[in-house]
Image 1 (cartoon, rainbow, N blue to C red):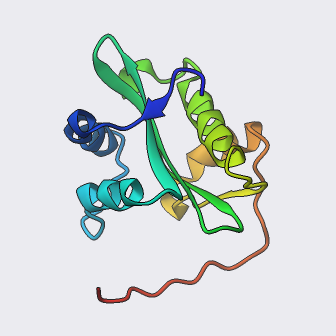
Image 2: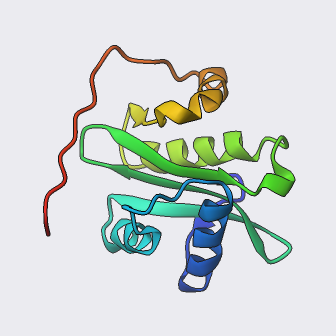
Length: 138
């Protein structure tokens, strides 16, 4: 997976710090809980890229048996522009493809419109669908 590997216990704090530095965390989403949930089953994972002992890129991938999803695509701001984001997406696609997933979806926050071009350059396109959500108490 082009240098990416699955997250280990020792990586969790560094991954959360990277997500925070990249502005991906939100008060209503506990990143530690998201990581734990992704690691708990065979249908999801967090992939990391390490350079000189530091986590510099991540992507969370999962699937529901029908479609794959990508979350938390992050690259350390000090090394952005070196193709690591593209490598993260491709690593997640490879992980999903190994599990028989043939289509990948992702969500981009409306206020993060600048990233739209990044995903378009990788072949992603806007689908004419409406995403609806409801929180459930667990």
